[in-house]
Amino acid sequence: MTELSTAVVFIDLQEGFFEDPSSRDDRELMVAESNRLAGLARQAGVPVFVVSTVHARDKSTWTLKMLDDDQGFNFPGTPEVRLLDGLDLEPATHLEKIRDSAFHGTSLAQRLRTVGAQTVILAGVLAESCIAATGRDAFAHDFRVVYAREAIASSAAETGWPLLEGLCDTLRQRILNRPDLERLLTADS
Image (spheres, helix red, strand yellow):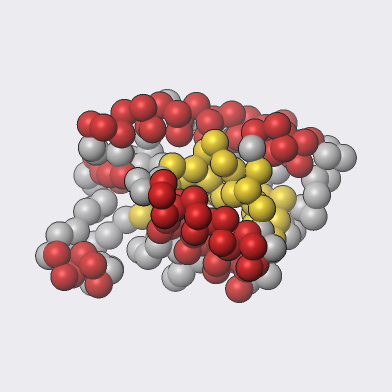
């Protein structure tokens, strides 16, 4: 078994978060790094969770920012909610969320406890919003957090990564690069 029974949580690897043509390189990198991390998890027998954002058209699930801008996204049945082409994350447990944190209004904490996870490796988008919010909430739910450096994208690197580094300092979380993640996932497996 890996260090403190680990699980991998992928967040918002959906078309709606990569619509900007300038994100093409990020998309390709995220698919490659996410597949690599999921493959390591499979080899180590580590459970994988895929959490996606889905909002209702009737505005009942919209955030304050979405309401202020009168602009929703990631509606059921639209191309925005689809996972990125080329992802190979299965087998995985899939959950839907309506806020930045993957814990808010979902059964993620319960499901992580059910599989015996004490440490969660977070990957996906965006460092400054959904990843950071999920990391903070993971701490509140008594999970240790590791951020997968190469498998996290940020639309504002000047604020996203310093935010995660601050969480590491204050909440005893870690940012690990690929070789360190490989060691973590293969420890005692």
